[in-house]
Amino acid sequence: MSQDLVVLTPGQPDVSALLAGMAAAGEELLVLEVADGPVIQLCDAPDGETLRPLLTIEVPVMVAVPGEVRRLLGDEVADRVPTPVWWVEVRAAGEPDSAIHFGWRFADAVVGRLGGLVWSASARPAGSTGVARDGASS
Image (cartoon, rainbow, N blue to C red; front, side):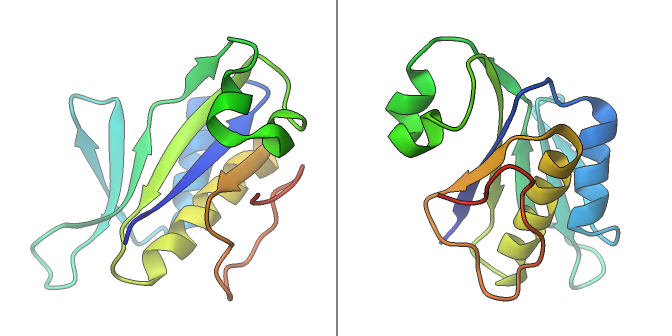
């Protein structure tokens, strides 16, 4: 089953922060533009030809409505981030198991550069290295 991560940063994620996150996820991964650019997928090609999406990264969105983070992610997260906040949604494929590790590496790298935190409904998997600068998963 796929897993979602939400990267919440106080400042707008710029191209360099997103590229650093993509490189941290895995320099061996291939980049695929989807939907004319608002979605990027990081893929592998286990058979050498067919791309297999591992991570889907959506364009950063500013959440400026007070209470919206609380409504979507709960009190604990809302109490830790200011409004407005930048929201980057990352979806890791269910297979292979390594996909979620790529997702956490991406998220941790972006937060390491910009501050903020990473939210996930699921706990960080064992063996996934890195800790978000201002918090971790909730």
